[in-house]
Length: 161
Image (cartoon, rainbow, N blue to C red; front, side, top):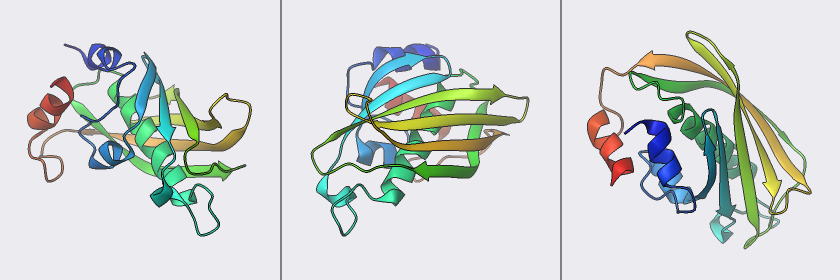
């Protein structure tokens, strides 16, 4: 099954089987999938807050980075892994514990080796833009294992199960 079909089968479900441990910790719900575009929903948890009770900028950056990473998976380039080479994030507003935030991603440019993608983080009804991130990613060949979980095949199996 293609990566895109796998992702489409997860629409409406918690993204708890991601090969990314950080994504599993964030535990978003996948709302929509198209090639190069994903929409995730997150419930802001107390451990995501800064000292004044707003969504921490580091968690915001992590959401943006991981959502963009998942978007690369939707491109069905099975022989490659995309690694982030930079993130540029503008912060406009915040969210509080218990609120729902929406991350919408899109691929801006798909080159032979480099990709550019963006992610907008919104409040639940998309009436307030919380942050906007842009990332450049580098396409690498998968030749080694990924993370502590084992092989790429095992990582892919996590998504399929």
